[in-house]
Image: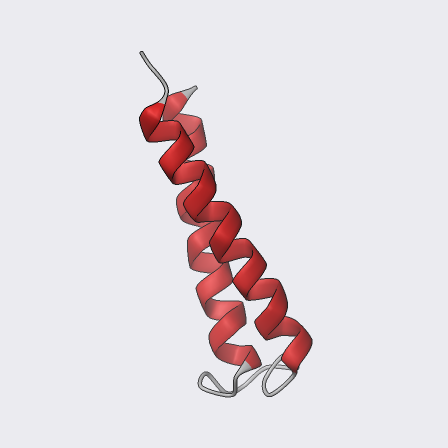
Length: 61
């Protein structure tokens, strides 16, 4: 279960980073570019990914 949680956390972090960067107009080339709501969604994904990553690392084996 720890491996699955870690994989999900990393995927959330990567997705959140892409969405955030597109939302703040750093990564161009998408319908999300320059739209604030995607920056907010990305930030939420980043926070959720960090939470899962830290929680997955703290649980006992």
